[in-house]
Length: 171
Image (tube, rainbow, N blue to C red; front, side):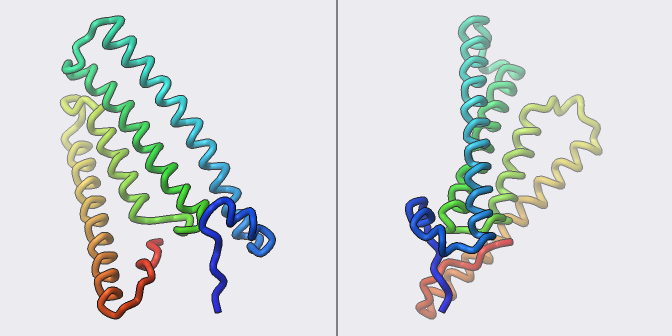
């Protein structure tokens, strides 16, 4: 019978001696990455607040001005990307998901690409670069949709058969 791994920090601490060396290593690395990403998020939010106060209040710039909007929204998306990454690491720490979740990585890549498109002056881009970014975004979107549909089909099939396990981990 397969051993059930702990799903929270108290369980991990309680069962630490029962975990394999690699499971301990994985939990430790996930914890370190969570702390680092949390620090990045705190700094990014602080810089965002300072930037918004400076740009919109002190310099009285119009938030609807294209350049101001790009800068502020780009910073907000940076924070959201870091939060999504940190959220993913929480699942790894609690042993609910494996270390790499392809669907989540694709979602983060889509967010990063959208952020790049928002902060870039599209009129300054070459048509080839713009087409490449559009193709990349389309490919990521299609891949994400296909992976999601596959998970939904698996979940539906398991519900019909009475299997209550979650879908297999994407890798």
